[in-house]
Length: 440
Image 1 (spheres, rainbow, N blue to C red):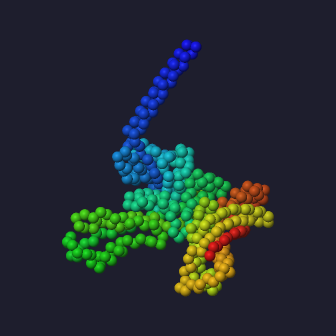
Image 2: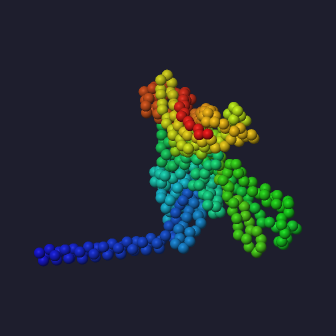
Image 3: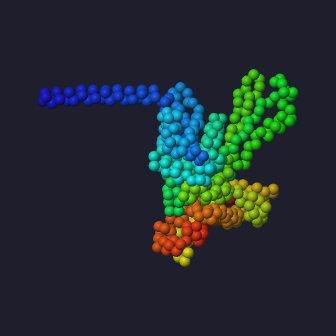
């Protein structure tokens, strides 16, 4: 019995010593980590451009600090291969943390129109970035795009992530992740798509000065005021623009103006086999997003409804929710049925003189008119996007796999006759099953 008690006592002492050792090791690791935090460079965004020498890779980097967070910076390197450039960036910046922190990858316009497959293959093969990284195409070069985004973040709380979520006149365009993009570009039809980011530089407003060019007091003259206003040139209809304001000192207005603008043009870049073959415009992107399950639509405008109440007016509808399904048939010819159910609310009627609504029956009739016109509107947008892409052989709605999977024999027989994906897309008959409700 004494031996058993002694054994327990020894075991408890050993466990206590072991626990103290673990705590000491853990504390040392924490101390080392905190002492090295300033040496760790975090990459928040990457961009890739095609240049004469090969490639240019641009990184938006952030260096954490215990005392004060430093602003993000833009660094770049050039080289003959993507691998060589990434290695050069690592040497230049020290220790890069890419996989967990890089949340945006921008392909430059020239690279996208040339081919992105070599670049994409490297990122996937080496597991450089996370599968959840957002894929985009710059309307200009990746360098200009990331510089513009970085400058905008310095003077505004709006950044590229907000751009993906802000939509004042159209769909919230669904952000395409690397996982989804790779799956599409290596899929059956080799078709992938992602959003286009546009950046527009704006001049800063110069400080107001007194007449005669001296630095004395007095307001600016009419001509100077007009020049100052003309320097703004913000495209308020199609851009998110940010106002930067400087501090005032010595009784003079410091320079203030606008940061680079994010364009709200709603374009979508469409790729086949890694090469950008077209851009869907805003209306076609809207059609794409009616079928996209993830994209949620805020509001849209209808015109030319006619009738006593809506005649000569424009009407805005807002969507509460939207659900989508796609079904396929292959009898005499391939057929796709787009099934959409959605609930809307009448938000605004824009008309000089709006008649009063009298009685419940009037509301029912107006609701039916809006439902009929909305069905036409959705079909117009979807068909516009589908056939524009089909002319390039692009399956932007990803409908061909339905036939390959569920109608394999007929699909293989069709394709074995020498016809192409482009032929197949143009032979598909589009059907719509729209179940809509409009609250007036």
